[in-house]
Length: 92
Image (cartoon, rainbow, N blue to C red; front, side, top):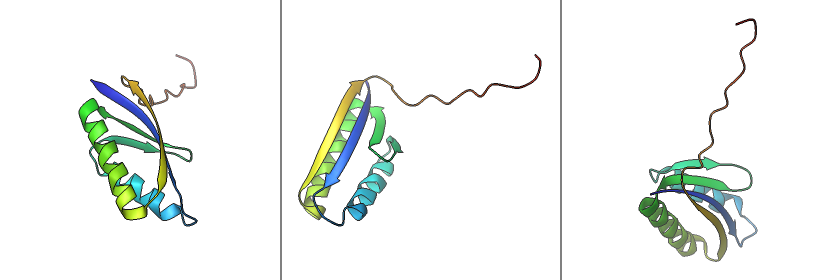
């Protein structure tokens, strides 16, 4: 079963950028398909693998950075962004 996740991470520290960058880097090296943006990080992969990566990432974060808030939306299925098809110009 394929799983799509939107994950937001809010470290409870004044210097929040390094923990966020570390979390994204860990996710990118997890074997999942990862799309970070300004508001959240989107994860895509097989259900068991995604859930294990999210669990391990949360545990690692709490161990290394302390208190934080994780907000996640889980959707069964493949919700990866589709590549845009650019219109061609000229006559067919």
